[in-house]
Length: 337
Image: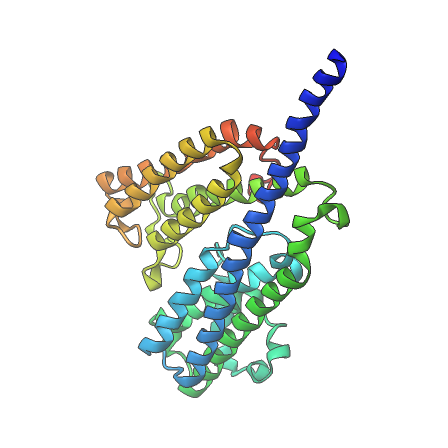
């Protein structure tokens, strides 16, 4: 009898733990992933419509739609698995960093040659990935040289083609999530991609930690450069004045993901939330939208403090959240060879 009682005591928590993991995954999918990609699809459709209505680079309506859609992308940009990986869709939306300036080179070549590829949505998907997506549109709308290059009629056609391509890509990602991939995460036992809830949680945890790493090391690290050689012109989306905004939007989205994953552990949830709050507070007080201040010692210290605070979130996630979920960060593409 004692054995049976002890056995029941052991099995009950394990069963509850399995149910908690399943509920956590379903919550992340239904309240974080699907709404995020729905917002991206909706904003991208509005962007394409705005480009059709007015393709002038300085159009307030077009720029507003561009910024709304770009916001929506940053909110899901950490979810670099599944439908965003298919056909290099994530890179088609967001080719950055671009250390060799491939985007302005590709756009300049198309404009100077008046490449007819802009006339077909299917054909446009075959162009250099550097000439597609939000960063290409940023050059076309905000860069003084690119936005004045060649004929206005061709630039208009190119802007419309890029905007339509963004829309098509966003719709394809959402469709795949709704029709197929969401179910794979929620019911991995019926999947040929994931074998268990543990593997799904591993994927989601990796999205969190890799997103934090990208924001700290790339969004902040590139303009920081070194103390002797800061590189403010390497800041993300600086032409549109969005560099700091991307850090803020990314932290907001990652905080939501972290809190949903940490619902299984009140202790990890509280610690992570306090760390995210500190980082977001630092962004609010930074007052440096394109990180131009990295060239100044005091300004650099403030950006470094923000970078370090994000690093602290990663440390907490690895030490507290990962063990609570029963997973580790694992290898990601940012780790190199």
